[in-house]
Amino acid sequence: MAHAPAPVLTIDGPSGSGKGTISRLVAEKLGWRMLDSGALYRAVGYAAGAEGIDLSDEGAVTRCAQHVKIRFQASPDGGETHVLVNGHDATDELRTETAGAAASAIAVIPAVRQALVDLQLAFRKAPGLVADGRDMGTVIFPDAAFKVFLTASAGERAKRRYKQLKDKGLSVTLVGLQREIEARDARDASRPVAPLKPAEGAVVIDTTGMPIEVVVAKVFAVVRP
Ligand code: DC
Image 1 (tube, rainbow, N blue to C red):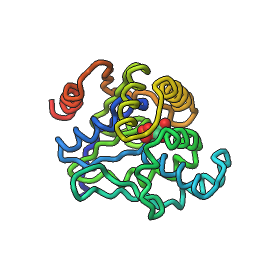
Image 2: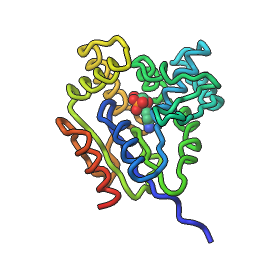
Image 3: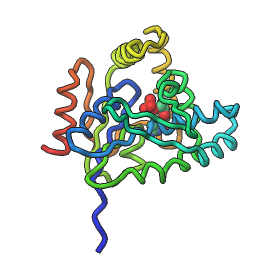
């Protein structure tokens, strides 16, 4: 007899909406696995750059997406998960705004998105999966039982990213960040394939001015009311 597929909670939303932090905390609370799909697009952009590929060369970027080896490695001390791209620990490089912009640029290529589908589906294992991204509830796991769309004002999202990047010792300006975030959102939301938008039936939560614990409680309640 076939087993029912493991339950999935999809958490989609624009950059800086708190998806990453919230997904990790809710996954921990549920004891479920987590998929950071943005890291896959960042890894492809990074690998392509490292191979000297022009990001507008769709064929070359697609071949790179089809062959790149991406591995998530849990930190032994319970710290952040490391991302290995073709064997190189690229965790630090992947979190920069440059990597985010490269990811957003290659994410418009349909064949690149297609190349990453099976990898994402393979994360769905018992006891469950929290999937963080832009198209988790609309394209990758349309049958997910639980769907959330997190949002926040562009000003607040820029402030959060600013704090995150500063804490990590990166040099950024608030004005520059807000501009980059708005440009990235516009591209992610207007692309013809898998644009950023709330999935049908998703619970939309505007997190502007909301403390993290409150957002976690609201998202957790979607799965365990
Ligand atoms: O979530 P993030 O900032 O790490 O994502 C980086 C970029 O990757 C984002 O601007 C668009 C792309 N992306 C995507 O197209 N689909 C996803 N499911 C996740 C990310």
